[in-house]
Length: 242
Image (cartoon, rainbow, N blue to C red):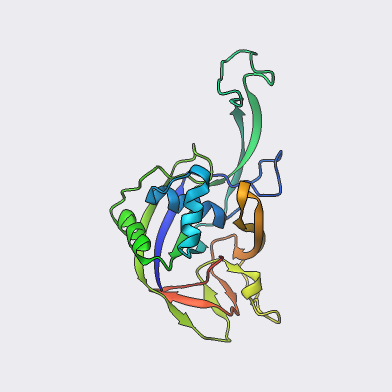
């Protein structure tokens, strides 16, 4: 199987956790479901009825995510406007008022490594082509549409599976169910381990179907674990979250 690796970065990002509606906190890492939207935007896949998601899922897309820079977060007040009735006028015509000041949490100047593999190699070739030539079909963002992002191609090569029962330094976040249950995590000074739960797959009306618990380091350093599914891509040692 071949794999595309690229860097994703931007000034601000916001990824609201699936379990909150009124408290706009953010995940530290871009969720796997958001990567589907990101790849769909680069390729120009139709967003209607989640067609992009179905197309990529049928293509057997696998997603790996790594942190390049340490996680930094900041909270800022953001004015939300009510557009539920398909209009916005800066008066009190909207029953909720013209604006709703809300305090949002953002990740700041975050850089991610994104690893994408697919069974549909022609579609993966198209993704690599668009990344190499920086010709995205649609604009990309870090979560919200106004948080503009950019991507930089790194490599496109064949994955090589590694069989090892020893501790390995990982360039990507690791699902906890792929870590050895006994002494699977090597605790070292300078590595700040963090675990977060993400939606892995969703169904109709974006209802979550499956979840994944992810282990990573918030200070951007490589975690050291015993993992039962490891791949090498060029100089990167990774595993997939989906």
